[in-house]
Image (cartoon, rainbow, N blue to C red; front, side, top):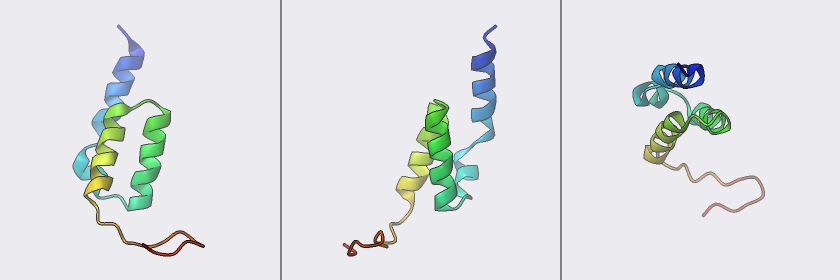
Amino acid sequence: MNTRNNLSRGRAALWTKDKIDLLTTPEVRNLLANAERLLETEIAALCIEVLGARPRTGVAAPGKPAA
């Protein structure tokens, strides 16, 4: 029995698209960064999907003009 795979599935099972969608955009970005760092590809894919569905605000980074 591979404990690493069982733990991985357990963590991934905690995150659904609906649950991630309730997070703020910065929280989703943080979850994405953590998922990528921990090689949790299923969670990362859900985060990317949620972020892709959100409207862009058009707020420019400091020192850069808005597009």
